[in-house]
Image (cartoon, rainbow, N blue to C red; front, side, top):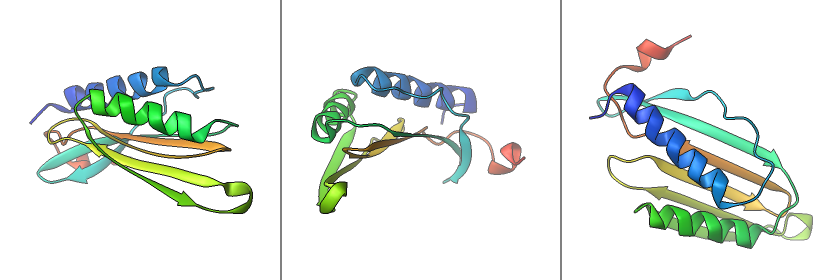
Length: 127
C-alpha cells in the first residue's frame, strides 16, 4: 500500500495527463478531499467547468489516454434531449492505481481523479 504522499502524487500525475489530453480552460488544481477506503485513506480531485466543447471528441480523448494508462474504461452515453444533447460518461480504474471518471456534454466537463488507497486513516485528514 502506498504512502499518502505517493497516492496523492499518482492522482495528480493522472490529473495532469488528463488535462494535457484536451485543450480546455482547465481551472487551477483543486485541493483533494480525503475519503475512507478499505484499510486506509484515498484522495479525490474534482474538476468542473462550464465550456462549449465537442463532447464526443473530449470523451474519446479521455478514453484513449486512460486506456493507455492501463485503466479499464467503462464508457456510456445518455441522450438528454433538447439543449443538453448527449451526456458522455465513463469510469476508469485499475487495482492499486489512480482512477478517473468524467461526465461531458456540449456545455460542461466534469472530471474526478481518485488516488489508490493509501496507508492511514480518514481521521488524519478531518478538518
